[in-house]
Image 1 (cartoon, rainbow, N blue to C red):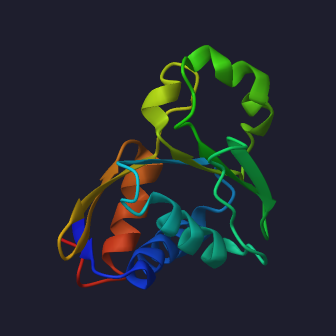
Image 2 (cartoon, one colour):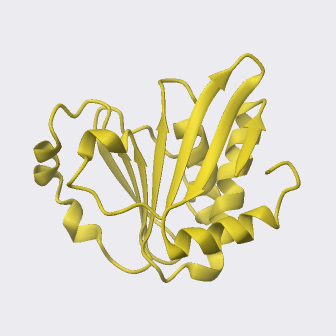
Length: 160
């Protein structure tokens, strides 16, 4: 599925729609890879997802902390930013395996930096910066991801 977002609010809205699509599967571990260059909209998308999933406060960018954990209505949200990771083995010290639980959501920016140490993605969101905004491609990478893409397609006519 591809769409274009022209404003940060539209990018947040897309994240919120994916969170809404996930609501019926809230008991499942859900992993979303967020790929794209700096400034392409990954954290903005994550903010919209988190707010729609029940985050009551602000989503902070984990660029320096690498990991931020937030309670949701059901489960936890892990927002991971691996931009500063030099080698995937550095992830061992984060204790990520402790969060491989049903109901948890992982939003992982720069997942390619953690290859081999991350759970497999359900959805891969690839962001590209264009003159008129951001192009976002959402790809199912699992059976759960396929279910989410079907539900997401039902929520917005601008996704193709």
